[in-house]
Image 1: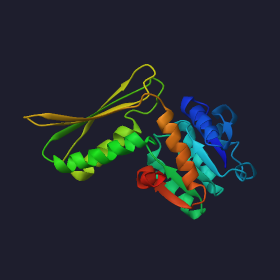
Image 2: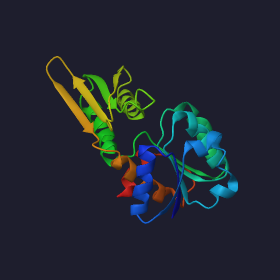
Image 3: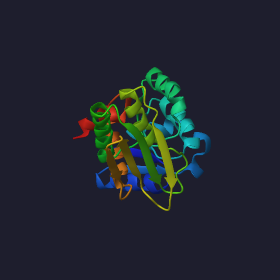
Image 4: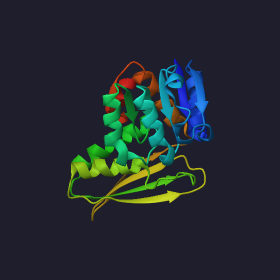
Length: 227
């Protein structure tokens, strides 16, 4: 496969490295080369099997508009843009493109999502809170992963109002803690990423999965299909 990686940051660079390890050819385009998605023309995009975006909330929407309008297959790991999800979904379906988006491509975090849902079902009477810690360069707070955890908890019990506490420290790759507390005891689910590699591997495997498809999916929907 020939993959296009948008973003030369730490995660984008690691995505490119993992893709090479898995036998793919990769082209990386940084934001300085792609202001307002100027590089994402139809002839340029036509050569790629899939596009993986790990840029910024400011850049990703223009990138999606350009890619999806040209029928590309796109994996989006950037967060902080979901207010535009309806428009991006509609564009992808209208142009027979493919869009796979998610707040976290780590297999471990996907397990955290499932366990959080089970915890909310098992202990509906408890009070819940979420704490998340990321590196100081992460622009969105709360993290997309924390917002997904909040959505899971509150969808299981609409009476819940789950608070999120965000920290930005050093080069932390990602720590998420879901706490369930009662007057009698406290139970926590804890996931800590030691590096960005888990995110990168998941994103590359997602690109492999989407390369022959058309439609729109959230990563939670298809993560189990990756094996």
